[in-house]
Amino acid sequence: MNILVCLKQTFDTEEKIVIENGEISEDGVEFVINPYDEYAVEEAIKIKEEQGGEVTVLSVGPSRAESALRTALAMGADKAILVDDESLFGDEYTISKVLAAVAKRDSYDLILGGYMAVDDGSAQVGPRLAEELDIPHISTITGLEVNGDKVKVEKDVEGDTEIIEASMPVLLTAQQGLNEPRYPSLPGIMKAKKKPLERLTAGDIGINPDEIKAKTEVLDQFLPPKKEAGKILEGELDDQVKELVQLLRNEAKVI
Image (cartoon, rainbow, N blue to C red; front, top):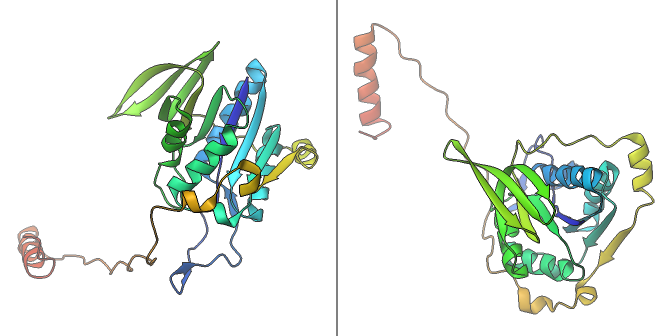
């Protein structure tokens, strides 16, 4: 089985966001595999271990994204591809076009990715990629069985569980609960250094950057305002209720 995992390198979720002149500062920031993509990597490796095959991890990003790919290789992926060409960086429209161009260079039975990236939260790249490749897709899965050329998945819906079956090739996006990603072992880290990592540019994948320019533009970025201190009401219950009503009417202006 030939499996492709699309991943993104994002800020560590423990990092403090600092904005300077409308741009997010990357000074001293720790970068990791996008947490939802990590579930996709783990699931791909589990399938390979159980049924055989090959796992390729793919990312579009600057040279620093190599560390995220090397982590995936250390976890057990077989090879990596990094599209390191600034002319191809953009929004979800652009990235899905680039990923599709790379995916079309080979034939994949299963494509996995996280359901969203924690930095932008759009949850668009997976479905867009599936549409570009003209294959079915199922998002936010929390369970997966692979039987021959078919997949059976579980996903949470409105407090219940939905069961969906599809034929491969298919694209699936992972939600928290699908698995528990492993930590790379020391032997895995050593092996990852020797595993192939291919770097591609626009010319390598036959894309004209001018034809896939981003459809959206970020005009400004800012942190949410700091929350004001809460107010504790004191006195008898009836007095607290009266004061609360007055505050909601005169200060919060919600009634």
